[in-house]
Image (tube, rainbow, N blue to C red; front, side, top):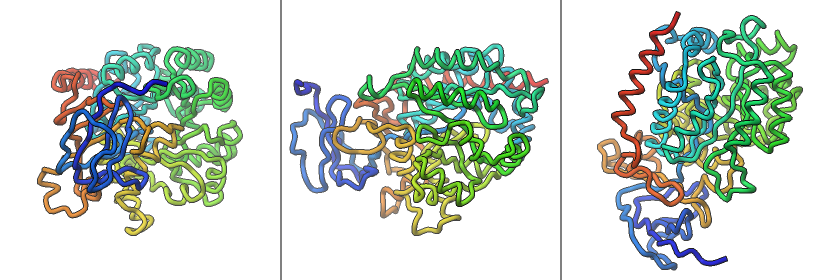
Length: 459
């Protein structure tokens, strides 16, 4: 193999580097092409040749964060009055009446806006769980693929599904569900069209996973068939599970089993699976999850806003689970800011585990290498030689950081909210807080117009 002839960039003299693996990169790192080729220890200069220098004085460098659970379309229904101050099931019941009117133009705008929010807050890999397919939105994943291409970020799009409508005893109205033959056929289509496997791509930009919405919106047969389809295509599985006690009661009433028992019956208790929320597990269930190496997307803000509970992250990790971070939908969080989600995780988890075990580094680790582990990604999630140069750079020259003694702790506890620069595969996609290709004001105007149109269509 020939050595790369791409120019080499030294990110020099940062205030601090959070590597997510305890390596020393005190004087920055060298980037060549799309990869990190050297970590420069504190007080040292690079051993390798470099062509250019990026002065990072007063800044913190960290791995680009990886969001593992979201619903982009929900940016169109933030703070809708009829859904405020409600727990999960009543909240969903109201909003389904709004979401049944979604169309392709709305989803395209929502995906771009949610993705841009995530990128501006330090994300280089953005994940979405889209499961609402009204008649005007049958090709939702194709729409999202187009939006992600314009954002120039890595993405994991999950082909969600709902087949169990109210007429069959499910929670969602029949207007937003699809029949199971359609779901399975389209799931195979989007995998064939868009999924970049790790075996064929050194560092995939776009991957597809399969994601029935939840135990209360699909049949057992669809859960089972989806697991088989995922295994045949070597893609991951995702769903909501154990988010509320209401869900536990629903599963026991309909299936005669707790959610985790039902999941195992459907063939989902495997390391191919990552679950959103994972709050209401017993101690015995946590052991079973750990033994199966199941992943959990921890979504603290949403869990607090809907009063769902607190994910037992440390217990899950100690049992053997892979735990990452997600902002969840923008109608159950009303924000798509990943670095703020890190802060929320720190604060919420300290209520359960205390201050000594839940550090800024722990919370940042959930959003970086923890999230990478959920997605079975070994090319991203930390700063080390050979990894992709997906990096978030935060500037400490704001009032909120003045007087801070520990720069990494400051990023979390002082409330960082936007990046100064974002690098993806060795290229700057955000500089001075602005995306290189997206006109933010135009996007904001269009998205606001479409949100008003959607909300006014409730009947």
